[in-house]
Length: 285
Length: 266
Image 1 (cartoon, chains in turn blue, green):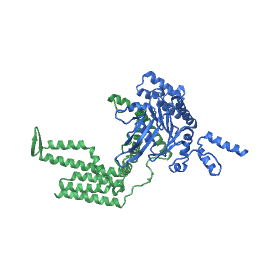
Image 2 (tube, helix red, strand yellow):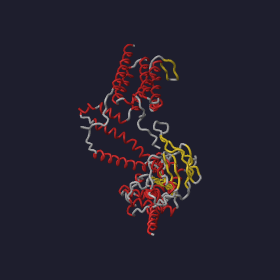
Image 3 (cartoon, each protein chain N blue to C red):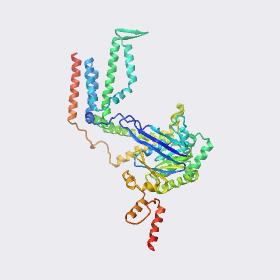
Image 4 (cartoon, rainbow over the protein chains, first blue to last red):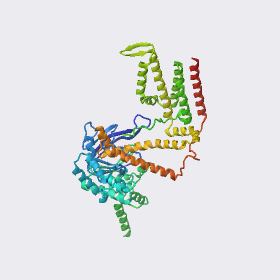
């Protein structure tokens, strides 16, 4: 499913003393099946931008095309769109409300108007997918641990089988195992459902490891758009925006500065290890 | 959705009125309200109007915001006017069907409307130029003497400022939860009332849970910083009267004397 943002602009508190432009003339397009990371400092407008993408906010000007259709057109079915473009908000565990986890996960598919059998099947599938232990299915969501709540909440979005999944800092507050779990889940979704993933994150290491493309938001505008290696080569500019580059890139740039010839286009750990190991190999002979 | 709600009415600006001590503003507003009820004739209203216009002028708050406050009492204004026009006995000017309009009726109606408008605009100046927290601080200090009668003044003020502080937090939370549930396909806009009440459950449950969580966190944080009530507590920004406050009091008193003078003389 492709998404095109066309000159999007959004302003909060319009016409009051607190007026603030959050998104300013933003255009980009995301192709079917892409794995895109959205980065930007706190308050840069990332969260507003993702809410515009599935019609939760209505832009002041500009529009969004999903599969070529204008979603802010008068008779466009925004309700059905919610099933196609899923958003996992920051700390999604705070949206749990039902008496047990299973019923909560059923909420999304039920709202899509699916029959009971399909709803429950999807809920079961989603809960299996997030690797929640079976005995937790019928517990109160409020009795789960923090990590389990997060899993249950994400299952609630996955049960709608979105073709595009937008995640706003899904790893915030998770332990390393939980972090790994999220990225495992995303890979699985991409492989099994060929889901398009848009990931908002502050962890440059995670992004370097997983994303195919990075969009950099600064003060409400997209300032960079490219492959990780390309974006991370602008380390000075990124630092000025209050962002960072991955540890791997830092090490490689440092090596280069000290006269060691390494390939600074490398952003993942595995490749970097191979590159450095290669240097040692060469030095030996 | 709800991010567009602005809390209270505070209009941030840097003006003479903004810088006044909240106690001064509360007291002067109170005096102004009393003065409006002392006025009997057009000259008194003229003085009250000039005073009000002057205050609005130096407060640097656009008149648009002042008028916005009147919207809330618009219906009341209309009703007051209608009832007074038709139901005041006196010299009949003309009558429609069984209702008759009297000279006294028009006079009373106009007077009531002017009074209400002045009252609301007068208090708007105070709420537009004072942050809610500053206002509670001012009230706490004004009512401090009541402590002698075992009234927990500090605690009440503390509760008020915490409650005020929580409004934007809860509004933001509500906004987030509604969006999260909308993203899961919940529909808050359509449907009959009975259906709509049901659709609020997915919002209200998380909202209450989060309100209690916030309250618990805040209590822990206060305890961790050794909060033990008002006794011996000092302020970061103690309220202190300055030159401008004495000036304001002087102007207010002069105004009141003038209004009383006009009321007595004419």
